[in-house]
Amino acid sequence: MIKNKIIKFETKGFNDIVDITKEASDFASEFTEGLLNVFVQGSTLSVTTIEYEDGVIEDLKNAISRIAPEDIEYIHNLKWGDGNGFSHVRSAILGPSISIPINEGLLRLGTWQQIVVIDFDNRPRSRKAFLSIVN
Amino acid sequence: MIKNKIIKFETKGFNDIVDITKEASDFASEFTEGLLNVFVQGSTLSVTTIEYEDGVIEDLKNAISRIAPEDIEYIHNLKWGDGNGFSHVRSAILGPSISIPINEGLLRLGTWQQIVVIDFDNRPRSRKAFLSIVN
Amino acid sequence: MIKNKIIKFETKGFNDIVDITKEASDFASEFTEGLLNVFVQGSTLSVTTIEYEDGVIEDLKNAISRIAPEDIEYIHNLKWGDGNGFSHVRSAILGPSISIPINEGLLRLGTWQQIVVIDFDNRPRSRKAFLSIVN
Image (cartoon, rainbow over all chains, first blue to last red; front, side, top):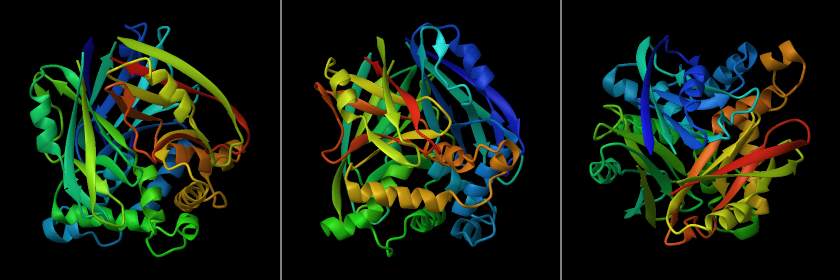
């Protein structure tokens, strides 16, 4: 009915974008019909889909930095001194989860559409993504 | 298989950010494995996750106001005069739903990751969030 | 348990916003309780909810263009020459999926809340959206 799988990986922080498509596809390949949800645990990272190509990756980092720049004042930083106010804001805007259908045995991503985790934190982190398949 | 629960609450509008983690966790605690979806009904609010801390909350409000400022011209306002063009735009960008796994009896949020509803409207509202658990 | 349906449609690209609420509601009407997921296939489009009203639609296009303007430099364009760097960035920020509950036989959208696909690409496209209902 539902099957959960946790994948773990290391990131460098600072908008590090990690492609987890292979892990997700491998897990999905055990099913014929279903729905895969990807959830990232934490308040300074997000998950989305993108063409995993160096240029686009840089372009996305630039856009995210325009939305919540690293070098403006954050009240979170003034209060707690941990310097990652921009990370929390970016994470809340991009969100923690996406869902992708499995249909006729295939995870139905587009050809140029990969599943990526973006770590917005200001230091390297050990991270977990939860894959849940409903079928 | 699927269990829906509606929670109701009042907001002040104008980026009011309401923490609904307790209601969601209480509902999730009835299950061992599953997937919780949170959906907010309406076109001037959103749901996401964030560290529910006063500083970060203010920082997020500021970032959202940069994306869709309250004091620029909106065609919606010119046509309908209800003054909440910025609210609709913010809601469409942040989105209406998130999904979080329940694994080994726990809703798998991070330690500093809370579920929040953000009401972007320009007046107090009575709101509904739909919690759906698939298992 | 899960039922997938693919809907196909044409878009004009350049922020073309297509209302797919009717297709989704018709599919949902076959169920009493459930959860509908909408996923769009591709790396230059997104799905969200909004009041489908000409003014708001234009206001959203303007906000998205502020987040990732068409007329700035994108590394993706410098490398590949296809000119749609802005499209990829917008798609990653708004995301590929949303989930909406079906409760007591109704798809629980708000009165002014429609399901829309936004095609950010820089040319007309033939598109697919996957509707998955879990129940």
